[in-house]
Structures are given as C-alpha cells and as structure tokens.
Image (cartoon, rainbow, N blue to C red; front, side, top):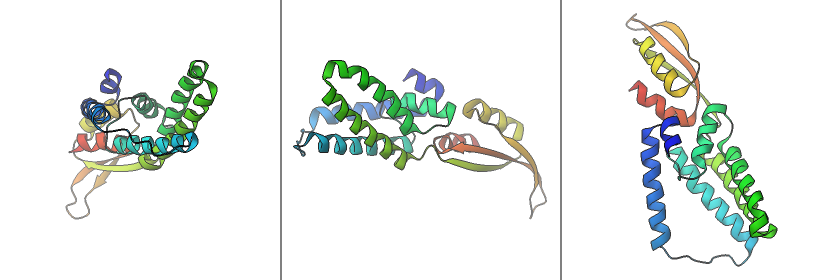
Length: 188
C-alpha cells in the first residue's frame, strides 16, 4: 500500500484499502458455495471471476490490494500489460510453492492465474494508449505537474482559438487508461 501511495496516488491507496476491507468482510460473512466438482472447471471459473473483480477495480482506479498494486506500478513504468505482469508475478510464486502444495495443485492454480490475467486485460485495457490534447493558458504549470505525476513526455504546441482568436497552448501527450484519471484530476 505504501508503494501504491507513493507511485500511483493517495486516492488509489484509500480506495484500494476500502476495497480490501470490504472483500475481507464478504469472505467472512458470505457462505462458500461449491459450484464445480471438477478441479479444472473450478480453477477456470475462479480465475475468470477473480479477473472480473480485479479488472473492474482497476478500471475504476483502485486495486484489490494484492499483487495487482505491484503490477500497476510496473505497468506505469514500463507500459506493459497489467495482466501479463500480474500473471508473471503470481506464476513465479506458484511455481516456487509447487514444491510444497504439490505439482497438480500448482498447475491448476496456474490455469486460474492465466484466466485471471486474460480477463483483467480484456476489462481493464490499461495497456491501450490514449492520445490527449489539453488546451490551457497555464502550460508551464500544468506540464510540470503532469510530468511529476505521470512521468510522460509532453509536446507543447502553440494554439489559437478559432472563434476568440485567443492565444493558448495545447499539450499533446500519450498516456494509458489508468493515467487518464490522474490527468483529469490535474486538469480540472
């Protein structure tokens, strides 16, 4: 959570903490229902549900409080897919744990992890890039704030309003979807 706060932001950390607390309460107070008798079907179904929950959380600017925080930080720095990063981290842990939990259990877990990563990427789409154009009269101030927070390159273009003929600047920047929330916050 500390890394999430420092690298992604305070809002992200607060919402992620609230999400983790609510999830813990749901686990304690909602009954466990055994839907699938097949271990393979259970691993696929749980992977899809986990990916759905994680992907929706990330899409709205928070996390589930697990390895997805690290995945979001790495994604922010590298631009790689959150699902692939999350799969790599979790699969590494499971492969090491396979020694202790047994290889059949580890392999079923890897199937669930793969399904989770695929669904996260399908829902979250954080790996897709967005082109943003911000028209502002405070280009220097906004550029500094955006570069400090998003660590992205920004091109400043001089611009003139077609109706008012008022001089301003247009900031041109390519970001990913998770950074859109942060960018909007600085621009408002």
